[in-house]
View 1 (cartoon, protein in one colour):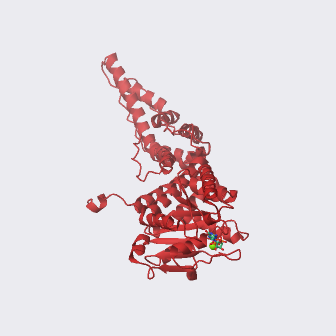
View 2: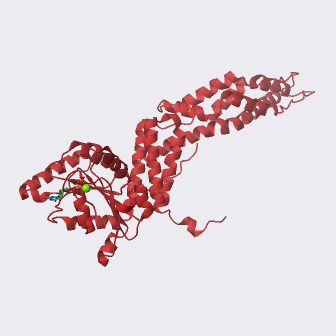
View 3: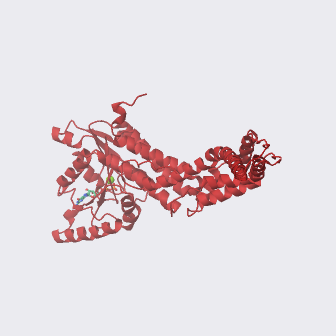
Amino acid sequence: MSPSFQMLTPPDDTTVLRQRAARLRSAMEWSGDAIAPSVRAEVLSAIERSEERLGLGVDHTVIAFAGGTGSGKSSLFNAIVGRDFAVPGISRPTTTEMSAATWGDHATALLDWLGVAPNRRMKRDSLLDAQDQSEFAGLVLIDLPDHDSVYPEHRHIVSRVVPMADLLIWVMDPQKYADNALHAEYVAIAASQGRPSLVVLNHIDRLSHEQGWQVVLDLQRILVDDGLPDVPVLPISAKTGHGIEVLRAEIAGAAQARTIAAEAVRADLVAAGRALERALARESEPAMPDVLEMVTTLARAAGVDAVAEATARRAAGKAAKVPALPGLRVEDVERERLDWIDAATHGLPVTWHRVVRDAVAPADALADEINAALRTLTIPEPEPRSGFTSWVTRSSRANAADKDVRDMVRMVIRAVVEPLVAEPTELIHQAYRNLDELTELSSSPPAPRSRR
Ligand SMILES: Nc1nc2c(ncn2[C@@H]2O[C@H](COP(=O)(O)OP(=O)(O)OP(=O)(O)O)[C@@H](O)[C@H]2O)c(=O)[nH]1
Ligand SMILES: [Mg+2]
């Protein structure tokens, strides 16, 4: 098939992210036992979550209100939606189920994936003016239960949905804004994973102007510790409406920046790549051992010296019987194979030793393949020449014959060693190096590395 212009267009966000997920998956597969089961589960769930999110399209932006009980998530949700849909609490506890509002379309598949019950979904447009509709088009707004609930199922919903949201709005209140559980278990983790966040300090109407700013400054300081030094704190009141317009503008901006959904998926995959990298404790660059050295040693172990020397003696005019090649013993091959694996994993975390060992063919299979190939080899037996030949000529003929035999045997062994030893090792090294790229935020795939 000849290349078309279509094939030459730069890949879009979804394609690049799908490729990243696929590379991460293959790095996982290649690294086999080198990864602890808990890290493997974490990375696989990030891959699956990302693939699912990409499958649903990145045309919607999922924004979720998260925070402690009574902080005002449902009240703020209602203020943005313009209707009392989420149930704000008069008597605690209140929100037990998620509510969702969508603009533009029903986003059915996305809401199914998020696990929003059908009767907790509301499509907003008819009551809104045209400006609202275009500003919020593609927005999926979620009201979450409290993370600090006495009901474990609330925490489960929050823990499940927080990694699925494209933007998190952390709702805090003046009483509990410093709550360690929220910061340590959610905000700091989301920050370390590069998930986009906004922070609002609700119930600001309960404080004097000065008290309000003191709390804002203190919260700002805690956010620096959380790893969110650049996220401003927005003072707000769902009761008086103070700050609601600013919040609306932030939400509209995020909804319009379509890339935010793609960014969230990318951050998810990068965080998974970093978890993988930490688990593998990458230390140094892998180096390919010398294939020729292995081949030469195997040729010697197969008995090439005696055959080459006898052939050389015949070429020099002496009568000598050229012996058959004895071939390789499994223990000789195993010794060489283990030396190869040691060299290929030198400086790498110890678990990679097992990964390379599993990838390279076992010694008995290697010995069988090499011996079978050597049996098909016909070693030329030069006829002793009659008459006078100078010493120099005889000696150069002997050297050439010796070299020919060694080259032939090495070529045959190399033809087995390349696909069964060198290429699998190179693939593992490539998977190991891929981890570098998988831990970077750059969206472009890496330039292909040259093979040795
Ligand atoms: N004074 C004041 N009261 C507020 C404000 N925001 C919410 N409230 C009240 O605080 C109570 C809790 O608000 P909700 O919106 O239900 O809080 P929530 O975060 O959804 O709570 P859970 O669903 O239990 O997690 C309700 O009685 C609200 O009317 C605010 O800015 N100022
Ligand atoms: Mg609520």
